[in-house]
Length: 173
Ligand SMILES: [Zn+2]
Image (cartoon, rainbow, N blue to C red):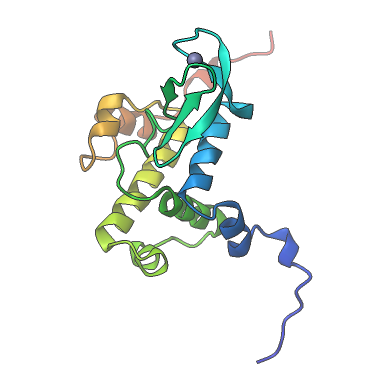
């Protein structure tokens, strides 16, 4: 085999980069927490003011530095009730973001070691989230809890098939 020039490598967020940044579930949880509450500061319900929070070992929780009240970064997210590891979730999202090829559940099963069912479900849920994001449709809690129900509500389907009409009315007046 010929060796290929490696000058383009740095342009990509590689698998090695991914594994370095998200080495384990803890790193993924930390990332989610940072997205939600940058700098580790968030309002403590008990103290009623912003407090620093620190990780509670062995739980998906952070505790107020002052009173110890717990907060849960995963609450309300697709990760909250999932038994799939955060790293697997992140890995599937990484794959989907790093290639234009369609990702198969088989590939995820092969590369992460989860069951085919878990791979398929994870993939489907992320696709659903992406669709919702593109449409700027907020999924209701009921839909999120519906683990294996239909992907889109009738309302979402209508939104998908209906073109925007408002633009026609616009003028530069
Ligand atoms: Zn507190």
